[in-house]
Amino acid sequence: MKKQIIVRGFIGALLGIVIGYFITIGISLLFGEGAYISCVPELIDAVGTETGAVIVQTILDILLGIAFGASSVIWSIDAWSIAKQTLFYLLITLPVMLFVAYFAYWMEHSVKGLLSYAAIFIVIFFFIWLMQYLFWKIRIKKLNGRLNSKA
Image (cartoon, rainbow, N blue to C red; front, side, top):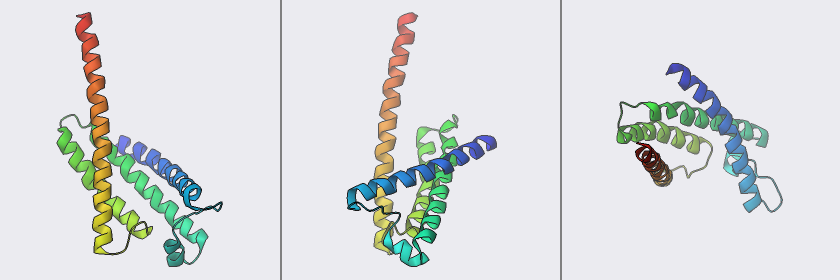
């Protein structure tokens, strides 16, 4: 399992960079009016330069990718219930997400901002979880139907 954590963490780090970059492209297309928005202005102000802010944001994207990638091994622990897997995955990823969001200035730096961001993350988390759950439930039902028809 340790090897899987390392491999998934490494892949997650790379995906964190790629996803972070594509998000900046999307934000630039929506709000940039032809300009590229590399990161939020508050991060640039906090770091002092845009280049420095991009470096900090990239490191935070890597951290986020590692957390999501490495903790994904939880989904392969067959001895755990889906509820336990979900809870542990959430308990690992939520604090990392909040840490990254805070230091990248993706959220307001207040208790209200923290709670709002956490609530939004949890809603999105469970929406994605539900979609995955339903997808696999339908897929398993189809596979079982094929097995039953061959028997």
